[in-house]
Image (cartoon, rainbow, N blue to C red; front, side):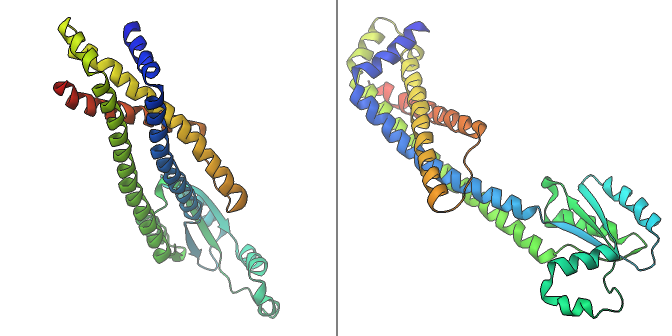
Length: 285
């Protein structure tokens, strides 16, 4: 293992300019991938913020005893999809309307009776904030005898589902394309290293070196270049994010775990690029 590490280190020393060019090329390819990742991350966070507003509201029939609603609220809270349940009385509903709908203050002042019904507001857990689950919960709420009507904004929630699916599909396709480009670039740089050391590899084979022994330094070199490129790309992505966050729009950056995962992905792409390139071109050396 120490010999493999030494050979990998010597590969960087033999051709420092080529190694630096390789790492730089990988860094910029991963930088583009990182920018797309930042866009995808912020879109996902925005959709998540919007999805927090997904709720199912059951309107209670007038004259329903509070005790009945309290017992039903506890039953609804036990639903596996439900995160929180709130009972809004008729008085609280009117107070909320007066606070939020200031353009109708004149109408509210002329009211002789409260026209707003009490309601039960049901918030769903993050994995269940979709149209299918909201419809299922609404159907179950409708089964309560004291429930007059149930609303969950079906059209709005269905549009949110479509947006989420489109964002996921675009992220998968574009992410796979950038990953393929990174693998090709890394594979090309490793192929150049293989061709540069063709004479040395031939001598190693003459003295009995196995294909695994010959491949190992190149695979480790690809891994190292991928990690270094990923680290440089992370720095470039941070600089781009800082500029965007300061002068354009507020945006989120990768968490430490996501950043570490990105660097690991760079290493994996480097390893894959090396594996493809070495396996193909060592046979011709």
